[in-house]
Length: 222
Image 1 (cartoon, helix red, strand yellow):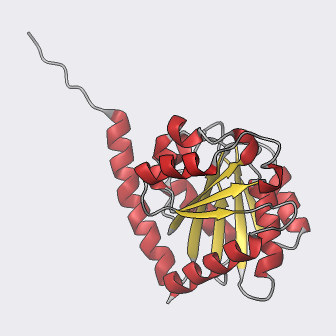
Image 2 (image 1 turned 135 degrees about the vertical axis):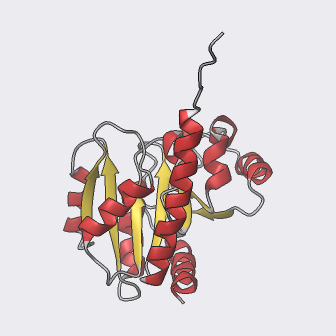
């Protein structure tokens, strides 16, 4: 009987991407550019959080945003109107960005003068977590209305993230959100996770998050 060669495509693709991501990470480090990969579900408040951080970053750091979406340029326009250098990345229907797609975006951005670039990844809790983008930091946002059980349902995202931002804490009294249970679930997946509780709407907790991110950028770019 003739044997048929079987190739595990997903595994091969991920391995190749991981190697390329490490190359990109070192390229960015040599240019003193810190890349943050921001991942979360739609409606968690990614763009609103970035707008709030923009106020806290003012005069302290040079930064820009790459907005990734399957289509539309709404978020990039929003950031530009706020004075943040921004470009829109369209993925052509793909639900994630890989390292090479990120590299293409950075080259098209053409801003080697930035200390920090935030990649606002596609609103998805599954695909973006599987692909290393070459970022120095993976950050995720969980909004209070989404519920405290997201880490149990989408564990990979919380394994690969370094920073977890819990947004919309001004709504804690309205929703049944158990902070202790959520943190315990995340700690089992990622003992080193750094937590921040904010309200991008009111500004509560944003300064603390901004201070931490600036320190991370300084350490990366040393």
